[in-house]
Length: 149
Length: 149
DNA sequence: TTTTCATGTAACTTATGATGTTTCTTAAAT
DNA sequence: ATTTAAGAAACATCATAAGTTACATGAAAA
Image (cartoon, rainbow over the protein chains, first blue to last red):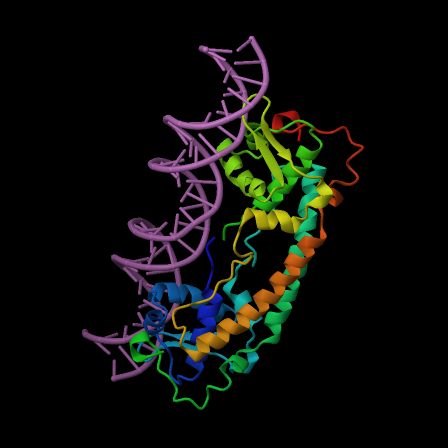
């Protein structure tokens, strides 16, 4: 089943952006992610909507962090990306009136809800500055693949 | 993102099968699930491989439970269906040498592992007979949609 | 012993949804 | 004015789960 790696990729990008100083263009980010600028804009648009990044048009424009990394959690970015559910597991809805289907679906969804709660709670406990820790003394690596991420 | 409702659907089927007495044909199950017999065989094959159901060819053949419902847990069926991961969330693997990607991926996967452990543990605690409880006194409903699930 | 019913399996087709692409517009700096 | 870059809509591609077709195998019934 298909995986959505946007969270991982966007976190990676945001931390690099933080050490970059100047705005990062969609094109630059796209190169880093081996994708293209429009996909980057689409994804970043969600983050901007929630206030985590800003975008500027024209010369010298691009994307910038709107707040320090310690104000942003994994949960924030996860939510901003707007994926409805974290699970590949879904429920049947063919016989909503069948008591057996109801019992089955309740058992499954009870578990999913509990596991998702835990997951979101943990995501909320991790802020991005913690992920960047220990690398601040490294020579700030440049951005795109051909420059050595 | 696409959902996999096989677990929910198969549990539903297995419980109905338990009260059916005679083997259920792939065609009958397919009608119940609004799908077709080959898909049913494909899915049931996983359950047979793990010993939860048996299949018999020819006249009067079909699928039967190989053990009572109280010997089968949600986890058993989940595993038998053979889905690798329960999450839609994946990790980037473009810069496996980049310490930032590593830190990001470790943070995410720590959470995923913990949440998945909880989920599997809970699935292991629920056996199918519990889901069927309370309906044993009902007139055993017949199987296919047009017969009133 | 032939027919019918049912699973087993492989190969192929379809449907869906994310991702990628093109094109054009808008806006800001040079 | 020109260049640079985001915004946005429309369209194309791709991956893959699900569905379908076709045929082989095996068991019971006629």
